[in-house]
Image (cartoon, rainbow over all chains, first blue to last red):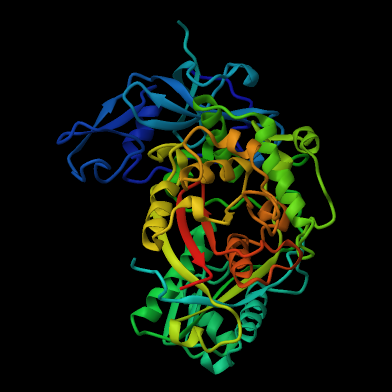
Length: 143
Length: 395
């Protein structure tokens, strides 16, 4: 489920995975969005951490998130914040609250920027990037 | 009561912010402000035995010795503080703590930034330069690829969430910028001195990141500011009226707001509560709120979370009060950074220098009569680092 974006993928600064984040980025190429789950306190965690940010335990396991959430907040960037978006026109930077709880920074795509609202249901989609990762973006839910 | 009366600011040195600082370096500007503060304190160069500075571009380590060698200071206490816009406020309590611990007698706290003419960074050409790719971190992997870069979009998302949860009118937020500009028009050192604005001017300025208009966003500048902090014994011997530190609080909860505990209940609540508790005073006794104002929404959130008005009532509070130097609730009498200018870390320090000048009775045309207590809040990053201070005329 590739997503169309207005961004030039050769200029968008691609993530460079580290050992800590390699599993997350590898899963994105299979269309999966991973979060971590603490086996001690059951906290859901994003982005990949060494230890649970709630209880400190290092017993964290990866699990597939549903990929569904709601827009927690957003802004329409009317001026580009980075040269990759120099010619993109207004674009939406948002924080999405996943069903599992964690907050995620993303862009809202396949939607007029002026139609984005806080609370809007959204679902993940993936934009292939040059360096063997896919970037999770969110679009309005199909339902 | 940990901080109350243990130290005071006795000297101020501050350069006028300018859009560009040709020929100057950050270090040269810091030295000038530092020397001015020492002279203003009535101290000799050799009396200074402590110094606090901040990270400086191009100086990757050993920053305090880089500054002290340039100035020729010999130090018993050398410190670097890295709290973004809260750095200036964070320096003050650390200086008092070092003096109280017997490490030194007189500390100069120095902030500054040079500023070169900028080449356009965005728009037009895709090759327009200036974007540094940060080293690998959560920020480079999970924020930069989405364009979540710089402060504008972070504060815009905070503002939209606040407006969703509690509401405030565009006119209420714009009034912050307008009244602070009126204050700047009493301050010849302000970068926008002599340029009054109206609510219509603010709301008709371009939207940069919804809902923030250009005139609600701070403008970068070059400049420097320094303060001299001493203990009680020395403070009583020096020519300037001491601005006594009565309380301090600090709180750091996140770096990127995506991972903040809340976007609308900020870390200011904890830092301000500690400062008021240490001082043994309450918000209703404060005669000046000198609070970080990178954006108008920052002022609204700070007034709520410092306890001046309940959560959710910030917009109405701004509407109902006169925020000017001669008003019923003076805020940022130097113009705030929105109208004074933001010379890097010295922008955050400007809220401290103004509180000190007002307490000392040296604020000129914008002096608040008989000011007893001033509240300062420093804010770093995207509402991440918070330092609150309370200054008093009496120990």
